Image (cartoon, rainbow, N blue to C red; front, top):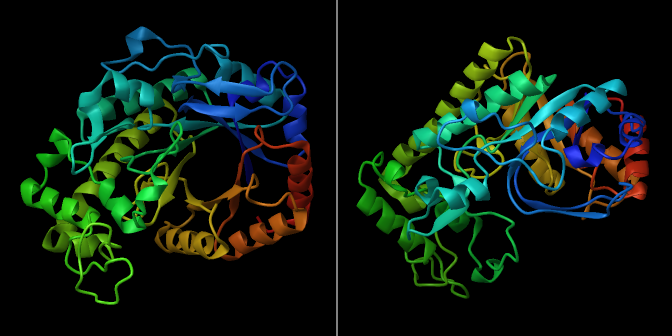
Length: 395
């Protein structure tokens, strides 16, 4: 199965869009129903070429009675019912529509409710990251999913950011690369110390101190830049070799709590979908890493309640294969495995290269391609994708 990702504004106002997407050779469209702020190119749209999306928005009508403390805003850059209009146009072209649903990633709601956002061990808030340790956040996600299923009536739903977001975030003029934090330190910067999370830790004060020390390079096992002495420490070192090394005896507890929050949120959302639309396929952007923080939620032990798992495959071929193989190993019988495949830069607009990547994904266990992103792609990239999909019959 081939699922193309698109925004509602890629379809609304462009009468040629549905046929153009159908001609690519895809089987369905993942259409954003709830999405974060972005700045998007629109190479084909008859009315604009660049669209500035300044805040996270909901692309179905906001029925005030359906919401609790957190209420998502409608967009001003497209129609408030853009999802419905785009859905109908795509279906008329023979394309089923899956609701691409971004959950805990909302800078607009985070800025309005700073008490509900992720905070790192230094107390720094991440306004784009709603923390699922708070019942108000879980309640919002549950209501969001229920509204999308009941009002949007999609052919399936794809959950993104179904767990805690973290340090990594492409925000306006991001200026964090020069700190030279390692992937492990970035994971530690993603651990939440908001009041709700701290109350669930066994020894929050000691844990906070361990995390701070590891981020600043003073943890046991860290190695200073330019040093060959494994015992050397100090600010600016490469830091700990793993999150478990940094947390020591607290690692198992923190891991269990973190994955437990994602699991509890996931269970609430699955129940909401099953209650509103029994049989509706549910897919999730998932990561096999228990310390994952971001759009791909931690799912180290699998979840048979889901219909499909989607793995991040934007990195190197080795990283993509590893993600797919690890998710495949924990997938339940009959559960579909999707490869989230990038055909935008830095990937070349080369059909042979794309087809080879798709074949490698299939060999690693994928039986679905999730293609990012048909609305952002140039004519040359869409042409390359069309040929690549014709060459790829295995997935």
